[in-house]
Length: 552
Image 1 (cartoon, rainbow, N blue to C red):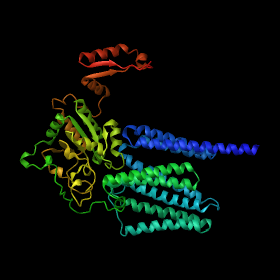
Image 2: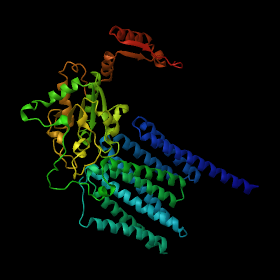
Image 3: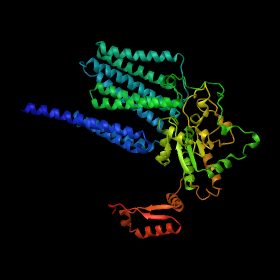
Image 4: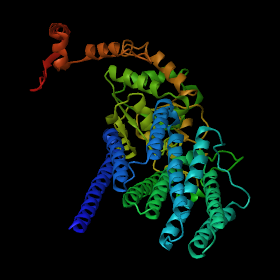
């Protein structure tokens, strides 16, 4: 009877574990699916984080290691570091932060594989091979991510670097890594030699990671970050096989597959093959003149003579914005470098306060990581629902009166559609030539990373070129707008007081809904609410009250 009870207990334990694991894996998939949409990304992040925390607790319980004090100390230390990073890392540093986290994931998988291999003899060939692969993939992920983060942070030159005989070195390190895994699995060797081979495997695989990451230029980093994210998931999945943890296998597989899918999407958005990017073939030639775009410019953007060029492009841009019904703002990496996201949002607020509709057109490879522009704009309190992806932005481009480009070049270059033989030919771009007027707030008129001239820089009829630091340029543009009749009372300060902003919005409102709650009762503020309602009605605002049945 006791034996049967123990068997049933073990079976019940397994049933609980696998059922909970399946549920948590489903929640991770749900979180990732919600991360794919700007409006639901925040809840997706919360779902994924809580699910991961629950997976840690489930693993500790199932493998009966809750009593290990070392684990709790390590998790506490990791939590403290995570909280410190959350408070100190700026949004502008998020790409390198993501790269570093990818590296940490690879390092964890490498350590898991190492611990599996240094166990006493008796491990199966499958366990040894998967442990070796976990070390190899984890090590190359760690070193590759370190190089990528170093380039993004400016510690390493961001340009593509290719050593003499680079392809040969890559092949040699890859072949050496695979050979060492075979040796560890097939040959019965003594422990000191095994430890040396494990160390050599980690070093050689790490060298492979450095070699493939160093030849990727800065503008191609979004693809590299996505691929390294995929590698970290693959490394985790292989490590799960080595330590017989099915939950780690499943989650690692999800991360690896989603990272690879994102990499493919971004390569398609750049019209480049992953092979060319990783081999460094996408970098523009050194010491050569910018490639001349042979593209025919949009009909509305043909070059004018010097005599018709406006004396003050800021005045022209302000006039166009003043009369616009809809404005689309297009951010790029230059916005991130200038840390101008709050200035961009100030322009949006000013336009909306004057009754102009605004949206943001975001190219998938703008910036240095997937979603880079979305993160920066969210930090500046730009609403999620006005951030449009490439296809959505192009659908609305024809009805857009003015586009304001802030620090973007290649992703808005119309030469991508017609300039054959250039690195960006065939790349989907934001079709700003279909808008009524384009305002460039770029640093200068030099070509972007691809080295292709933007023909719109030579146009003057429907283009305003406001060169310089994006933050200073936007400030000056807003100063000029402040002199106009429509915007004189609506240009908002960069760090606008929320009460001033609320007063501006209320003053311009035609309809308003006041929603009371229990806080109004606690503050005994009902008479003040009535005064607010009456004041708004006197200025012509239609006021109503929305009351929830369980408010109070």
